Length: 428
Image (cartoon, rainbow, N blue to C red):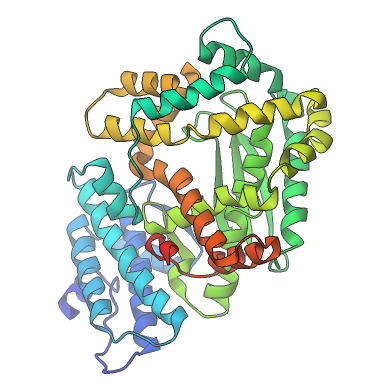
């Protein structure tokens, strides 16, 4: 252990053996974990999604430049050291210990992938995100598309009719910022009625192009986020609330702010100053961000609110809002088609062009959007499960613990966002 620590230049800070749980030893392990994640980020450009810990730690890592083999051996040693420590009786401390251990296992898996190890889609998602998405056949999606087929105007293929229908609900580019700001105000207002945010929290919005994703939250620390919205493709009216809630309130911005306030500042848990994208934390982050849309705008409230507040700003016909959301509800059932396309593509059963065709046929994406999604799969691979499976797991967890009580759902949701839970914990 000490030999590995010396090799990695403080990447590992050895802890003293003890017969009882030692908080200081776990704090040392947490710092070692942060350094290992930062080291991995030097080899994998997408790996470190956010870091707001001591800047000198990153500078030390960049000066030493640990190899992938050194990172892996350090992660294995640290994981084994944590496993050998006595389990604490306090539930939050037990969650912390399990979280660090499982995050390290994902780091080891990511090192292996970057070094060239080939994993099947399900093996990769289990290794990185602590979860495996269900398998669905073409027949399953074909049955769902039949229901949508009946809801659309006639004439043309289903994708042609869906695209023609959606064109009436595109936000004009010159009105995008006004619509998005109104959506943020609505999401924030509803969130603050139920959750307490740290003083001074804020974020700014930028509009960007040439990205494989539609929106991104870059957490900066100090309760501040940069949210980027990709304008490569037309943005439909429902995406305003989706992005405002998912990236902002009560999604990523709230999640990261609460982790910083409750775990980093209040408890001194430095491991949450870094966010490794390819890790179990992402399923919690993406799943809670997607479920956050539903908890902020439950049931029919969303369509009614958008009809009143967003459709007029965008210059769209409010009278058609209910029709639009009926179609959207049906298309949302096809979200797992994206997982299936990614699984088949990454497992080598189909090529990129066939994956795009599969997305167009079974996820009913336009050709341009399907090609963009394949680029996303190329870059982020099995990460796609975190959006739909993550949402379903978070929803099931919240509703199992809160029942149908709306206020209790908010409370359970807030507790989830402030704790180091793993995807496998959501079944409990």
